[in-house]
Structure formats: structure tokens, C-alpha cells
Length: 223
Length: 384
Image: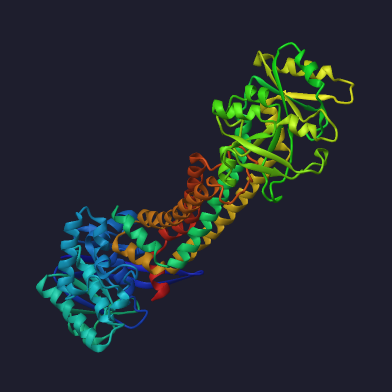
């Protein structure tokens, strides 16, 4: 088992009101699974993804990923853990506009002790996998939405992370590009045995996953 | 090193904004270095002055003259080894804007008392032999293109020298061997000026060489006592005090110029801080993304602070470089040769650079702290 969540609760404070976003969520994900998290807006799926990514902390409960309890880690420890274990794919790609595709993909590798040549090899391999080997010198503004998302995926896989997390990865793309991205994610799952957790509204996108979980009002419900 | 490239890329994000911020820092550093150069110029004169020379002026002010008969009385004071004198001439070379200092001096004794005025033996002799001869500093010669043998015509600036123009022949171009002497002045024979003065035998100041610097105060007192209760009372000081009082004629320069430099630096600091804050605000998502990728908050702090420092240092190098180039070359004619040993020293250029680094650091401090403390989830949600 790669991921194990036990009784995870997340509360937000809005003024004096405490709002529960996740309520005693328990789940587990095996290595190599492609899990789709579905649910209406405000159901808590993005919050769950953020907790799994280690960019947010639960109010209570335990989150174990690859044998490590991340719920109680400090900011600094979490940053190091994220760099090593998590590849994050955003809905709006979030590439750095002043960096080329190559430099964007190289960004997470700057935190490693790899040499320049090793970094270059890793980046070109990742760009090869997403089919953008020939676009390495392009800036984000010179790429289409689908290509930008591919670069973002290359950035997410370049460190060979334990876990790939995708927050509505096709949400900002046209149907054709969306399908291409889903095919790429599927390929990463089947060919490279990457464990993927994807948040989506789209039932067609969810069909590409090997497992689907539905969230409503902060708890899992049957589909 | 790998992060440095990232900082450079980030700084080039908005070229115009970066250029304008760097330029504002450049102006601040340029002003600082130039103003420091003026102050140092004045202070250098005092610092480089001789301990064996003392100066006697009228007790009322330097601008009032005293009779040449004082010379004999001063020579009689115990401890005075040698004596010379000089007058401020205040002539106009072609145009009042062409300002430089001209001194009517008792040439032979003056050159004896000021070995820092470096002339070749031939030039020195030619000067001493020519009643209408003059010597000019090499800095002044460069400014106006004076050469040995040239004629210099000065209009009378102070009415006591009559109304007729004075014509001089350049007999030598001297170099300054110390900061007590500047290389932007002209010296000629006191006798030549005195011959045509309405009131003869007037001296601006006496320079005395004393035998023992430790006794300078006692000797100065003895000189002044000679003229107590006469119409021409004197005030004798060491050369250092004289130079300092000369500078103080312009008021408290240190305070005045220091305040201007301080105000400019503080204003620039606010400009740079505002720019950095704007730049960071625009990049909230990017910073959140970098944090998500695993960049620790300390590294983010380093990026932002480093960017501020880089832009500021860029301005610093530009400002210090321009100051050295323009001020040292006297291309701006800031002092008109009035301040001896004027120039931007390497120390002031480096201080200017340090100030620019300081501006960059302080300006980037708050935005960098805010960026490093950014809550990733909140920052991502703000845009999503």
C-alpha cells in the first residue's frame, strides 16, 4: 500500500465560523493505481489532493505515504518530501513564463545534487516521454494549451516521484488536447507504473482511471 | 550558481521596470559618490596640510587684507623660520563662468615653503625671472589647454586691482605633490599685482614655516600678540585649521551634503522597495508553484532578496562607474577647480556599491519575507 489516510479531518476557519471540508476521511491507494477523485464543487476533493501533496496540513488524522507520516512534518521537511515524492499537475499548467520548456522542466532538478549534464539528460527524457523533445527551447507563450500541459507533466515526472497528483488536468483544455493529456497520464500509469491521483469533474476523464472515488460534503460516497 | 541564472531570468521579466529601478539606484549612487568627492576634496586639503606651516590672516575675516609691514614683525617672532605671503586675485578668464583660483604670491619664498608645488628647475627659474610670468596646475592646463609660453589675460575681478586687464605668460605647469596644494590653480608674482593695486602693500595671508610643530600654538599666539590693539589684528592658525575654516566659509558642508545624499538614498530605497513588492505580488502563483515543487521558503527568500540585490547592484555599478568617469574627468565641472584633490576615490565608489547593495537588500527584505511565508494553498486558490 502506497497511501493510507486514516480519519483525516480538515477544518477551515472563516471569521468565527469553523467549516469542515473533510470529515474523518479514510482511504488507501496501492502502488501503480490510477485513481480518479470525483465530486461536486466544494466536496473537498482539491483539499484532499492538497493534503496528499503535502501543501496543506490536516486538522486531525494520519496521512502515510510511502511509509512516511507526513501529517506532522514541518514546513521545511514537507518541502524536501514534496521535492522527492510528489509530481503536481495544475489545471492552469502554471509554467514560469520567463523560462523555456527545458528550464521549466529542469526547475525541480535544481533542488537535487545532479550535475548539469545529468539534469539535461533527465529533462530531455521527460520531454521525450511527453512528445515535446523538439519544443525544449520554446517559452510557454509559444506553446498551445495542450503543449503547456505536457510540459507541466514533464516537470511533474522529471524527478521520478513516488506519486503524481493532477488537479483537473484537462479542465482548461479543448476536447482533443484533453484526450491527449489523459492518454499520456494513462501511459505513465501503465507503461511507467506511476501512481496517479487525479481530481476531475469529467466522468469521461474518470473512465480512464483504474479506480474512481466520489466525495460529497467531505466524505466518500458510493457512486 | 544554478540559482543565479534563475534570478537573472526573473530580473529580466519586466525589462523596463528593472531598468528604471536600476537607474534610480544609479542616480542615488552617482549623487552620493559626487557629493562625497566634494567633501573629501575639502577635507583632503586639511588632512594633507603641513604641520610646520602656520597661516596668519586678519582677525576679522580672510577677505580683509593687512599691510605688508606685518612681514617684518612676524619674522621677528621666535620660532618662525621662514615666511611667505599671498593674495586672492579673483580675476576673470574670458568669461565669469571660467572660474579657477588665482593667487598673487611672493614667488621665491612661496615655492620654498610649498615644496609640494612641483616644477622642473628650468620652469621654476623661468617663472622667477619673469615679472609677468605665471605657473598653472596641470589640471587647470588640461581644462583650458594652457601650454608653456601661452598668454593668459585676466580681467580684474576685485576693484582694488584697478580696471586694466592683466596679461601673464605661462612659464611652468606644476604638479601637486600633496593634497595641501591643488592642481587647478594659477600663481603669479605678488609684486606684479601690487604695482597696479590702488592701495599698495596689501597682503591676504602670510604663511610661516615654524621650527617646531609642537610649539605651533605658542608661536601663533606670539604672532597675533604682535598686532593686538592695532587696526590690523591677526588670527594665526595651523594650516589644517586654515583649510578647515576655508571650507567652513560655505557653511556646514558635511551636514548639508550628507543630508542631501541621505534623502536621495532613502527615496531610492522606497522606490526600489515598491518595485520589488509589485514584482512579488504579480508572481504570487509562480512562488506558490515553486513551493509546491519543493523549493524551501528559505530558497524563495534568497530568490526575491537576490533579485532585489541584483537590480540594485546593477544600478550601483552604473552610478559608481558614471561618477568615476564624469566626476574624475571633471567633465561636469562641478567645482570649477575650486576644491583641491577633487575626485571619486575607489573607497567612495565601493561605498556607493555597498549602499546600492544595502538598498537592494532592504528593499527586497519585506517582499522576500512575505513571499517565503506565503501559504501555498491560499496563493494557488487566489488565482484558480
